Length: 66
Image 1 (cartoon, rainbow, N blue to C red):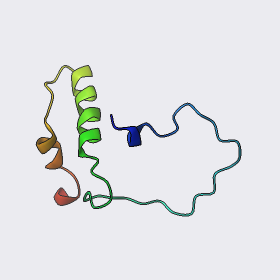
Image 2: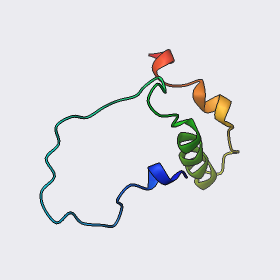
Image 3: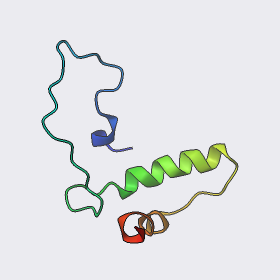
């Protein structure tokens, strides 16, 4: 998983977080999240006994299908 995907897991904030915006990047314009999504999908597939998928297979799903 990329460093960006690790976030602040396991750490608590010292003060309340004021969220001013939430962004959704459905087409990969801001961040190429396909490698992280592929990693997550393969962890799930492995746990369920299914074969892994490659990044191009994962990129075939998402906003394009909506």
